[in-house]
Length: 363
Image (cartoon, rainbow, N blue to C red; front, top):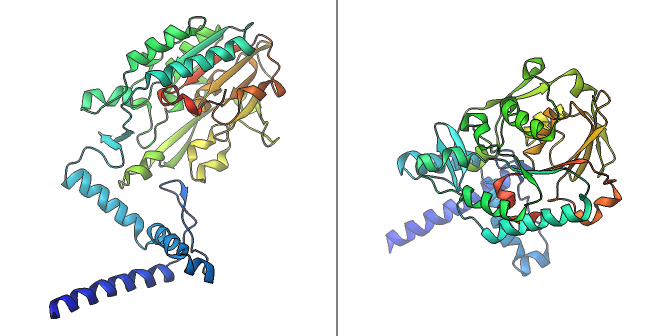
């Protein structure tokens, strides 16, 4: 009986200590490592206490605001990786200090649906255009198979796309990159490593790119990407480089959603929750880059995901304007309200995850 009493008292003390530590702890509005808002102290009222919602919300709050939460997340991750020798944490794995996230199940129907959506766009708006498509290789393409991790069947994905996009020209980028051309703590490719990939796209489009030797490289030293928080490993920050030139500095970006006009780099984003947003300001449904120093009067439309934000800046040299459309955030059915389709060059540029999960494309 004495043992049970001591055990119960210890549990109550632990619960009480946890409760009071949460109430005394300074709440944080968001988790920078996880890039999400954290639950805040729930409303206390007769209604929330009587219907039980207070305790439910408090449980969520306590998990988010628990003191030393980040330290505990890191301890759990290190135990799983280094002590228990597990291959991943939260689906994120590490190879030679580079993090990537497992995606292994190819949805053939999903890829086919993506191709059909692109084809409908071709028929509806782009009949007079030269249309190209490409798969942006993800980091798993270079890391997963050789290190024993499951991965998508990229060959089958390419076959399905080729079967259904017969009136579009494919631009193959797989051999233009390696695992070292991606950030170690983030899924995205590094802009300064894209000379070969950008050159191949430009040749297909029939335009030129600025030689990389003519760019000035700017550096943000304290970059921690999306996988840093998901892995919860205490990894070192890495540099994020972005390339500037007279041409890019003269360009302006019009953001249709907000009506704002900015430069191609929004450097204030470097100290925000996602420094990769420095490229064109991050996620944006519809935006147009205007190049006053263009060598031609040609125009380019790029249907893209976040990978497109950095590479498209390397393609603007010969284009009077480049319009970027992110169909994850805007429906294709309203594009005519903003874009005059008149035979522009067109590039569909998506990572494997978007082709594989085509339901995110609003067409």
